[in-house]
Length: 395
Image 1 (cartoon, rainbow, N blue to C red):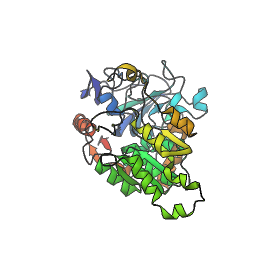
Image 2: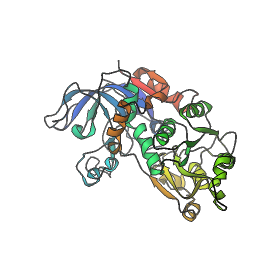
Image 3: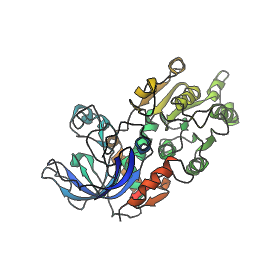
Image 4: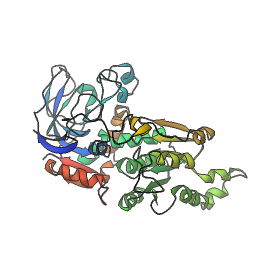
């Protein structure tokens, strides 16, 4: 079968063996759509210890072609989307809802995933077929038919829609809360959507790519271009100009205009430096949030921070960064972060899509064939204007 493979430090189109059932609880899925994720670029840029020869891709949906004898709740022909976490559904962590930290399916440590560095021996789904372990637990059944009007919306359930919802939850977003999101990539954009779902109507978003900021504006956020202004000062200035809010505060409470209630880092360790946009500052997003989030507020770190970075030297190569803990501790800010446990959210978010309450597929800008994927990786990595979310379709 054709697949996108990580080979010799490159992402290539390759012919690889079609996967076969290995366990009675496995299923083989014929892929209809697979997205290219921003976190796939960490492997593309050789910033992770990626296994040579692995098939890429962790945002996958398709049709079941074959099931093992132990699969009892799914059948050939069922349409489903797969969470990027691979999990058993039975271990201590899975039973508590933390499918992102499954104890059984990765022999190295807690947590497994499709087609990703350090997430176990599992190929991804940027391919014509994929093997699905623990299929009864993992696969989320979908209505409709392949390539219908819900194809893009349902595909977002594999990762970035629940990931954005998880980010908003970690950040304590709720009715009436003000929010700042660092990064207007796919997760940042859907964090706008999820913040609105959870009740916020004051949402700022920071990025330097104008086309992404314009999309964020369409979704209901207030865009701030970090290449043009200091986003911390800009957001504080905008808050202070809110005369209605200022008029509702008692003497002393004007300090609440110095920032926002909730902060989301949707960039991670490859943040651009405010001082020099051509350089990385691994803690730039966190520094923004430490300055902007109000005392007793919440921060959700959903951008990727890896324990190893082959593209760095010194402490940064081991995922050790200078963290503004003094400011965060002094302000009493609660910080949470992790991979999203997709199974905690995917059923409810699927039903929200079905009910017409969300259409996360609106951020998809490009549909491509698999042979176009290596070139699209390069274009996406350059943050080419107008590329927000890319979907490989297997028609």
